[in-house]
Length: 254
Picture 1: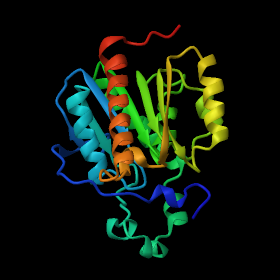
Picture 2: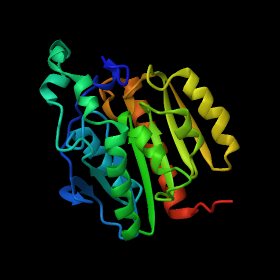
Picture 3: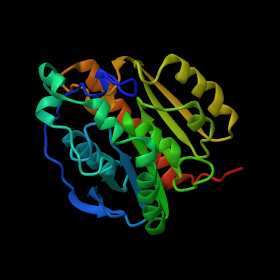
């Protein structure tokens, strides 16, 4: 695997149930949309499974209902989707060229698209939040940068490719959901986040999930009691975070 991603980034379980939202567009790119709140929007920045992955759309449905928001899942892979039948079958992983895929989806390529989608949401909604999983984690932190002011809060779970500079630059309330086992969000980065963010003057919540690994929040196995409990807890934590900062207490920068 490429140094940017690991096998944990493509390991996971496909959830049951059908998405309830619709296909639309945001800033000129395909997008899954669910919910109907005219004031509050949440943007999900997807992982390597992309915007069409059933799990991410089902999670968006939960946020729309439980956090009372219109939720958007834009395509940030330029129309490319990793073949699900291969991704979910470890015996076929050799058919994937992840280094080439990541080369087509670098931060330099995708950052302007992520910012563009957030700008459109900011122009339409009073309050905007973002949440990123795996690949989407660094994008959420970039949206939270002090120079952008495009979102009112962010949440991330098991972020990949996250850099110290992105952590140090956060300017809005941030929730981090960190599994015990994660080769991408390393102990060094976890420690840096916990040492640095409390000095930045923004509300911060770090939640630790023992016994689970990278990708649990969006690709955990519902039939595994420990993973199911962690998945539910992560979903509930994000919902509470969005309720706090998109509905109850708009964050005012000091």
